Length: 244
Image (cartoon, rainbow, N blue to C red; front, side, top):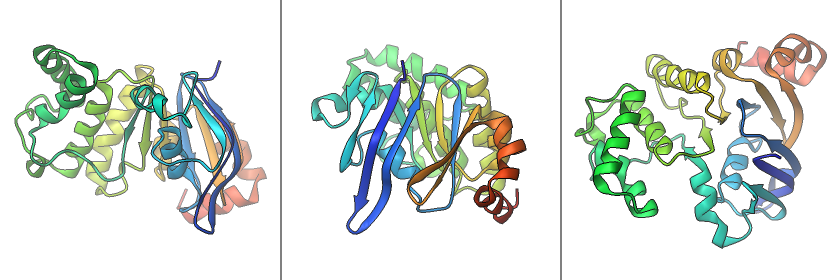
């Protein structure tokens, strides 16, 4: 059974239809990379899965629950942790307090237990010495790594990652991608919107190519880069354009 089922959804913003009768399933396995031109619905798809955008038609079932039912959203957002393009750490809280806010408030976890768990995940992303640091004392790459750790502390069944390296310089971007590569090796299920083809080549198990709100291609990584890029003119042009 699929962990996430996207069933013929349509999503528009005013007169602009971003996703058109779109369907795809995701199991709780592997790393799926979503690529394609900007504005073609990749980020919107993740936000619809997490219930941050309301769909106009169709349905999305996450862990057996419909995102169209408001009462399901807490469970869905716990099941699908999301990390955004722009880091959304609370600037008035230090790293540790950012980490434990959701476990304590949403899950009722004991504060000391939450702190212990936070230290485990901060160590996992290489930031065990930053728990007392404030938002403005962290680099962009460190902020994103805290955001990843903060998502992991809630034990999500999947991570939704929306172009989380796009605002970073190449060195910081490599820091973050290295963390994601390690998580992938540990079997963490991820849906990743990115233009980093080197990451897709090394880590993805599956690649989706979206164009104009439709699913053009859904293939295993190896087939995508070896066969599909040769056979599909649209995908070939896109990869050439981004220097792949």
